Amino acid sequence: MLFGLLALAACTRAPATPEGFRVGLITPGSITDAAWNSGAYHGLEAIHDSLGVPVSHVEARTPAAQEEALRAYAAQGYGLVFAHGYEFQDAAERVSAEYPRTIFIVTSGARTRHHVAPLIFRLEEASYLAGMVAGRLTRSNVIGFVGGVELPPVKAAYEGWMNGARAVNPQVQSRSTYLNNWDDAALGREAALALIRVKVDVFHHNADAAALGVFQAAKETPGVLVFGANADQSSLAPGIVPGSAMIDLPRALLTIAREVQKGHFAPRVIVFGLEGGVVRYEPNPAFAGALPPDLGSQLQGARDSIIAGTLRPAEAK
Image 1 (spheres, rainbow, N blue to C red):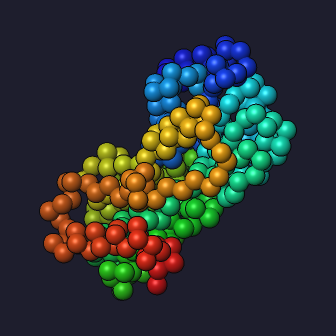
Image 2 (image 1 turned 30 degrees about the vertical axis):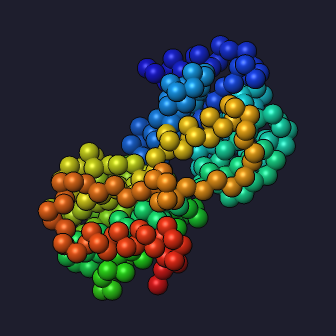
């Protein structure tokens, strides 16, 4: 219901002026995914509540629909549009060349061009820490990863997960699969069950709504654990989620919107990692007693090294 009210407020306003700043969000999938897209939508709500500005959201799954949505927001005079995913980069650049008064933020984007700026989240820094926990919890020494589409940021998060596990358990083997889909929970479940059949007993993911099927497969299989991604997902499967590699998307989006609203924004590469807390590993307190006693100091040491730049999670050997 809130979405309908917010979208209606945005659509009934005149085109944006300095006094009529409006913010749009385009997601490539459902905001009910309890992860990547829902986090961005909560960020849009935070912008509405904190800045008191009209906001609007649309879902656009195909490249053509994504470019159409970008163009529609710009033509309506929106001052700021969040294009939520790496796949929006090229379309945002094309539209920005025609509408220079709109600022486009591409989350997990690749570069700055025209009035397009990437908002990069180093999720691999948090998934490295999650991998360290997984490496100490696995009994089969086989961990698994289910991805939506093999985009560069998704691949980096997987490499962080794998490298973190191997840093504490050199015997760990990793199995991964990509669904070429962000939405099909049934497909995610089948992919997870297939990995369970080859002895995977601890999972990570980056598959949006399709990952809900990974949690379902873990709940159906005694002894299997699954780590959350992009949000604290411990509530999705109580008792089998040791922690989550998460992004505080509301905080990140609100930070950018404040800067744009004040007229202080300059297009640039914007990066968030463990330093500052937007990206973080969120442990599940219910698992505290099940972890090896020395793991806490190992995690802290790795976190400090990542922030210092002496440990690069996606490149670690």
